[in-house]
Length: 235
Ligand code: AMP
Image (cartoon, rainbow, N blue to C red; front, top):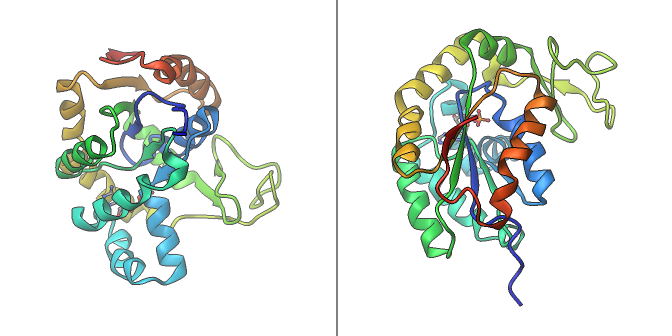
């Protein structure tokens, strides 16, 4: 018997680096009981394991540039076909270019999915810099903290499992600037792409992470049952 759908359409998170995509995607995916597919996490995992793909991606990531569309799309195509995504999934950090968004449409059509709903997190430039430079991630469970806005109880240690909190190599200030440039040049046009399809939900992402998660859950609940079909709104 086919798996019951937990989401009527895939969700994806748009927004500049530091907008809170990873933090929100993680919480929202857990709420709906679907996998969070983060291309950035997948690349970091390949780099850590020293695979061929990781070797190719590492230098590009360290410069704050985007990995080639072919590599990313191939990786996503394989990932979304796995059984854990049969009930729905949430994409975090993909697509990042118009080419990727077009390929995603084809992939989803082939897999029998409706077009995705894009959640666009809008955040001020000052908040982005503060979030990126303050971000620390648990090396064990991947939980995300911020030394300014969401510090752990014990400095440098994860509240959940005591794992060491580490800073991403590409959160250094010079790389951050290049990542924001890449976003402006290549990813920002996706806002218009999804707006044209009536599939964009723009949300002010400046508020505290927990409050934003609660608001997003309220807005996205209709996505369980085919609501939000033609979403195009600002909330
Ligand atoms: P993220 O964790 O989403 O900020 O991604 C970290 C880095 O991985 C990016 O700066 C890119 O170098 C690479 N990356 C992640 N997702 C993509 C994508 N969809 N297209 C191209 N490069 C990506």
